[in-house]
Length: 237
Figure 1 (cartoon, rainbow, N blue to C red):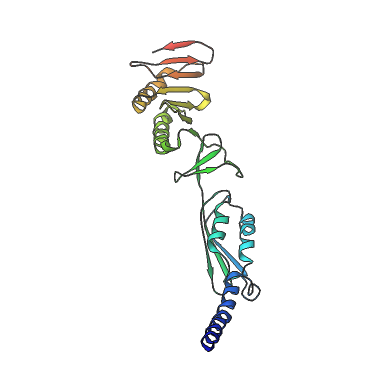
Figure 2: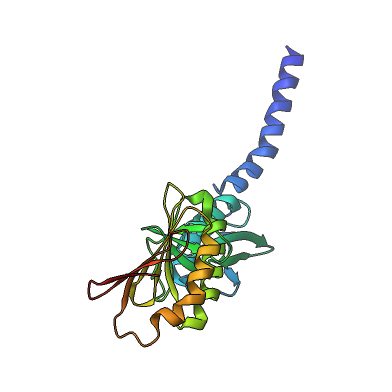
């Protein structure tokens, strides 16, 4: 019996030592004694709403210095519009630090997402989409290919005074571009870069002196192009 009493006494002593620690770590007590009073935000951003950032962190900071779950706080910030990456830390005695990296938009992607300049997709919902972004549409695993063709085709068409406003790569692997003014360029699946380069070289001569806006250019021919003009006429060259 004495051994049992000693064991019970030892267990009670350990519990009395651990219970306050657990209570502090779980936020049962101590949130008012060791509160997080200061929020420090690090990072250069233009579109993340700082008020919403504070609002997202407030429920987590209320737990106090010891009980706050940094991973949960970090996840709450990461779900905010325009946040690419977030890191939340605490610094004794009362500071909560959050570092935010903001998405920098490169293009629209499909119907409901944006593509960042780091090649990451993020939702449009909750964002004000900047004007003037190109429209890129393709399977998600072809991001690098679409960006590469977009950049290359812009370089090709800049000397002609035209810009590339849209690039579409469909499920069959066929390319279509849209240029300034709405002209559609049907490139097809084969030799996309070579076809675009040949058309861009000839575009100044084809368009020079024409008062008819170009509606469509079909490059899917071995030697030459089929051009459709806004007035309904067509030419082959």
